[in-house]
Image 1 (cartoon, helix red, strand yellow):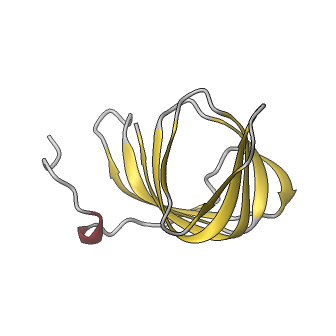
Image 2: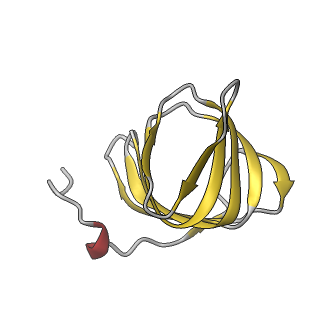
Image 3: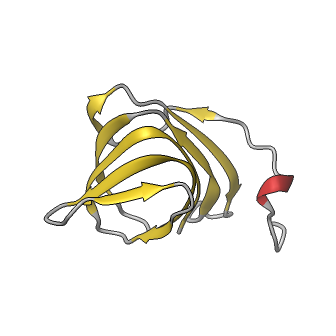
Length: 114
């Protein structure tokens, strides 16, 4: 069994470069994932995500909680208005969301996938 509480600042994750599997639409975005926690069955992940400017088409199959720490991006769900997100914004993306992620200024966010 894993520890009952995992504190991000107490972890020392190894960076995973360009693990993003989304379809690139514009630019040459690069990502760094710092996965600080993964549940035993792999269904839940917590960590930090950093991304340089660019645009992807995305299809979410899992729920994601995001806490933007730096940067600026625009998420546009299919058939909806763009959502502008900046440092300090906290939001949730539901499974089934399809659309685009456009990183305008390098983003650093904390995330939880479940």
